[in-house]
Structures are given as structure tokens and as C-alpha cells.
Image 1 (cartoon, rainbow, N blue to C red):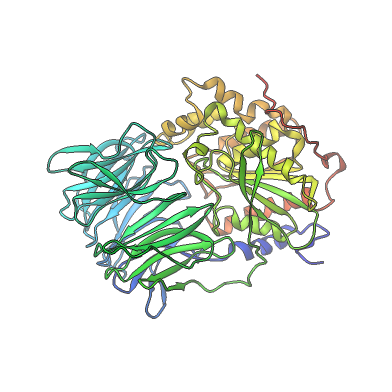
Image 2 (spheres, rainbow, N blue to C red):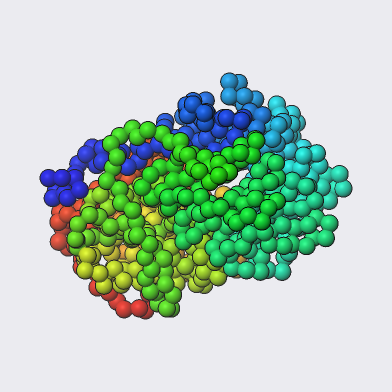
Length: 629
């Protein structure tokens, strides 16, 4: 027997060993220069992100933190200072720490247990920090500033809502803040401490996504990534005197990141093209053509220029390899610094970009992970979270799990159903409120398309998702119960009413914009909630949840499992006491997804389940979801 072609169930220990080959693949990400030849990065060799320093000359990698908890956010300065945020047990309530140098002992900057403090901008000399905090009022964020080493914090903007500081003028009198008005609408604020006023720099006559902003080196204008008046995000420049905005870089896809070199002579940016990143460099002063870097199909996580403006650093991973640090010179040549593999390379595959038709004639994009061989294969349909998100080509999130599944003989179809970002403003709104179940119809349409393929086992199709994808999983098995042979829900929403009542108060208003409010849309929330259609669920279900989840509380998992257990349905629950919204610690990912994989293997790949549970699904045509009112 080979593991890739199993004929009998693997026991849990065997499955953990198999899973570890896919999850124990450490990477380096989020680079920021902290000197002319040193880059601070997030390094997950310990199984949770910590801080290391990469010497780009001798290529050495030196760990400088070793905590039991993950480092969530990392800022650095050219002068060598570092600020980082760290939560506890996955609760996302970060506390802030300061390192004056890589050899210094960490000092607390600001903190209050149970509240969030998130760093936004650190000055190039490492002495001024802007951050957001909900310590005063848990339901909103204040924008605060402090001088490092930590002094008394002062308020830049009180009750800012979902806002984050992103830049500070050299004289420290002005700051740029991105404030999310709704989940898919934002505004760029200019806070002028001398004048004592806050100005909105972006128009409010159209929805506007804002992906980033920075002061122009001349301090007379501002760069901003937004999609005001258009479908996709472009780079604009706003003149602060006239408030006129002009396009700097336009694209037929979203521009996701940009960085201006310290000398102000070069601009770098990346474009999200159909789920992977393309990186460009432009000379601001000359009319030379844009230079596109020669890169694999993957996803960039952050960019930073060296202090002398000679090198661009960014983290990047692909669907087959974990993140490494890429260094691009002004001539376009690219070097890579990564971590050596700790285990033998697992049997990964390059996913294929496919499109399938759905009920209204649209084409839904998806990535197909196809095992070796001719098939026919069982298939796992995988749905990302968000919904304001996108399945990307990167070795993070669900992709290691997708690769594990395909190595065991299951094809995986990873969907970007309506509501996903990356495909324009209109596509992202196709699932709003009353349209919620149209996204579930997209998932059902994926099954219809799969059944047209000769390499698919039509009677062995499962569904899996995390967070909002977990809701999509539960909705799929209750509104289309005859399509599925198995399902896995990871930190998913079972009941929108209890979810809205119990989610973190700082998130509630924005989630209401996407799903509906308790005051005005309760009937809708009840109608689309899987818990209210639980009698229709006959699909075997495996549920994973973190006890400290601040977004989708554990109660969501407990109530759906209790309801199915009461009805004597095939359901299992796995709770991780030291996790929050998903599994962030490597040892937990190995255990949790090994257990989920065994569950799916028994029902999708192997003929080891009781015959009454091996229900060949019957495609019901293209009706809307069956909703009991």
C-alpha cells in the first residue's frame, strides 16, 4: 500500500505523520528593513510566528524572539528599532512590545489584558509610533501616538471606529488614517495636529475600498490605493492644496500593495491578477517603461525598500512552496532567501485555474488541485472565509490542507464564489444580505460542473470551509442536502442571530453591513441560518473550533453539534483550548486537520462507512435553496 493510494484507513498517528509533511514547512514573511543589510521577518519555524533577522549579505537567519504565543504584527525602522504585537491563545487582543535593537530586551509599549492594541506606523528613526486601541471603549478604536521608549500615549483621534494609522509626516504633525465605514467602504483621513482638524481626503459620493496610503516625499500630496468611481483598485495621487486626484498607476485588476523608495525616485507595486501577484517597479523621474519582475505565480505579503533605495524586499509564497524573502535590485534581478525544508518535500501539485457556469450565467473562478492519475477521484469543494476575501495562490490558509487532501487521492476545488474580492466591486456585492443564498447556489453549481467531468466520482463529493466558509459549508448541507457525502466546518457560523449577539463588539457594526442587523434584518438572519434548517442535514459533519474565538464564538459550533447529536446524526466536534478563530499553532493544525482528513477519507475515498451513510447524491437541477419560512 502507498499512502497516496490507500486501500484501508490510516490510523490517527499515521495521518498526523502524513499531515506534518504538509504543515511542517516553515516560511519567512512580512520583511521590513531595520538597517542597510538587515531585514526583520516573521519566522514560523517554532510552529507559531516569531521574529527573526535576516542578514542579506551572509544570508544568516537569527531568531530574536521565542514566545509560546504568536507574533501577529511586526513593524521596523531603518534605525534598527522594532515594534510587535502579540496576542494570547488566539484571542486577537494584541499587546505591544518594543525592541530598541535586535540585542535589546523587549519592553512593553502599552497594554491592557482583554483589549486590542495594534501597531500601525513606526517612524524611520524608530522613535515615534502610531497605533490603534480599544482600551477606552471595546466597541471602537482610538488612534493614539507615543514616543519610544514608551512614554504617555496621546490621542490623535477618539472613537475612530474601525480605523488604522498608516503614515506619519516627518515633522510628526500630520497622520494618515484609513477608516472603514462599512466592510467594503472606507475613507482616508488626514489628521493635522497643528491646525487641530481632521480632513477626509477621499470623496464620499461612491463606495471606496482603500488598500493603502502614504505621504508623497514632497509632503504636498498623498499616494492612495482606492477604487472610487471604478471597479478595481488603482494608485492615485491627491494634491493636498487643491484636493485634486489623478491616476498614477491603473490596472484591469486590483493593485494590492505599493511602496515609494526612501529617496523618492522609484515606485514599486503589486497587482492581484486572478489570484496571484505581479510585481512592478517604475522610475518616478524618467519616462522609462515599467519593469515587471520575473516571479513564480504566488502571493506577495508585504514590500519594503532598503534605506539606500537600492533593493526592494517582499515576502512571497506559492501554492506549492511556503513563503520566502525576495530581494529585487534596480536592474530587475531577483534573489531569494528561504528556510531549508525540515522534512522531505511532500507530493504537492500546481493547481489549475478553472471557471464554471452558475445559475445566472456568470462564470465562477476556482482553483482545482488534481491528484496524479486518471481518476475518477472523489472531490472536496473548499470555500474560503471572509466573505470579503479570496482564495489565492499561496502556501497558507487552507492550501496546505488542500495539498494534503490531493495527496491522498481527493481532488480539491477551491472556490471564489460571488462575494469574493479580487474580481471587482460589483462581484463582491453579489451576496449582500438578501442575496446571501445566491453564493450557496454557486457552491451547488460547482457540483453540477464537477459531475460533467469524467475524472470525478459523482457520488463522493464533500464540502469544507473556514469562518464564513464554515457557514457556506453548513448552508450547503442544509439547503442542498442531497449533494454531499461529507462536510467539515471550521469555526463557521451556524446562527446569524447568536453570532451577531456574541461577536466582538468592535466588529458588530461592520458585520451587520454584510449580513444584516439584528434590529432591521432579524427575519433574514433567521431564514439564512443553518441552525433553523438542521432537520434537513443528513451529511456526516466534522466541526473544528477554537475556545477563544473572538469573531465566531464557540457557541456557534456547540449549538449545531448539539442539534445534530439530538437527531442522532453523524457529527463530531473537536475544540482546541488554546486557539481562537482557526488553528494558528502548527501542532494544532497537524492534529486538527489530520482528524478532519481521516473523517473525509472514510466517507469520500474508502469504502469503510455503513451503507446507509453512503448516499449517492442526486442533482436536483437549478432551483433556489429550499428555505423553510
